[in-house]
Image (cartoon, rainbow, N blue to C red):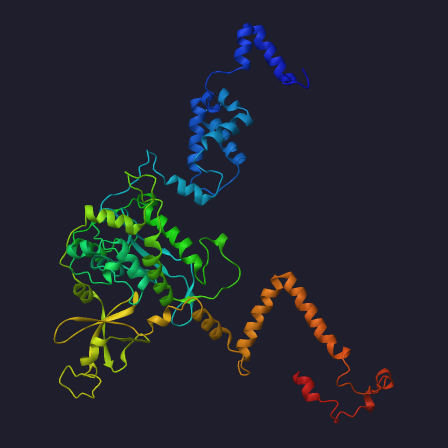
Length: 558
């Protein structure tokens, strides 16, 4: 039978011959053509052995990752300690290893420790989608470090923290903020107030206004919430009914809890070490990293293994905030989302704006007597002067045409030239440097003053990176030796890491060194060297130590 389709090994042939002798042709047919269902190898194992293997694998959840052989040795020790002298302890190595591999399915006991701990957080029950079909019925909030490095006002490099309040039904961010430091309960209270009032689009962003007006139900939004203005209608507005939070101290603070209680919002506390309770906002951070942070100068990658080796030009915190708002209103809200599908049309993916428009007609939410004025009253304030140039605040200039009758005005009856008399209370958002607000002393209306350099910030992609490189390494002037030296050191360090660039650099230096000798320009007559003067040894007694050739002081100082 060798060389044919009936060829079998010697061991298989004897096995078939034994089946024929024991059970005849029927037994041989059953042996060669198995018709029964395949069963796991561990189904034939002793239940006590299975229990010991499960116990050993469960104990490895928080342990460092080791080898499979190490786990098999621990299982044998447990068997010998629990059932000494039993035949269960004589299980073969290959069989025991096969049992461990089958029971390890889904546990990741021998993979990365982070993967194993994440998999252990999954609930041991039937999965359900967790989607909601009402705006604001289920909301999630969380904070994370952005995968991008930014410069602060003093030129220090750090990674900011982003906080997002997320609606599960429409995948629309109700409010967001980028913090320089770790946020507190007060910061989250301002974030909640910003979500209830409704975020305004950036002035002059025609793309945001156009994208909002073509998709969002503007007329219906005006009837439901009359406090929304034209700029606010370009961004979806959702009232949060219930917010899922984790066990962070900033979310469990009394300030944030009191703010939620004041507006009738229910707080849902997630169990410890269970990110699966709020998976939508966690997954949204991955979208932010891949769709936003990876396109910025100064992107660091989403893990240590994905970080680059060389430094890249970075942006300021204000530029990243402005870019993040523009990205959400123009890109994210108008991009199809894989999790937004209607039960009536399961094959179609919706954008967050489209899903918001569809659900807004069904359940638009509640109308609250909470206006923008109430939000401005909650903001911190500082006294500032309103001059002809505007308001100077945090090294920025804010201005508005409505400040015409307040410039240089006296509030306390003091002399008009007195600086103390002309100071107004300026309300500001600590995490939104685009605008400040001033309350008119006569009409009690709030005047919104925008940053005069807002349009200049829109050129954050190229201009600011070039400016920061200039500030770091200088412009190349003769008086900037330290900065020029630093730039040369960086270039040399990068060239050493690139072998081709290093070899090219060495060849160029060698060619530059031999160039003067290869050219006849500026050549002079050679002068002979008196070799006898240098070959004969000198007598120490004949040396004139006062001559300029032997400067003892210089030698000692050197």
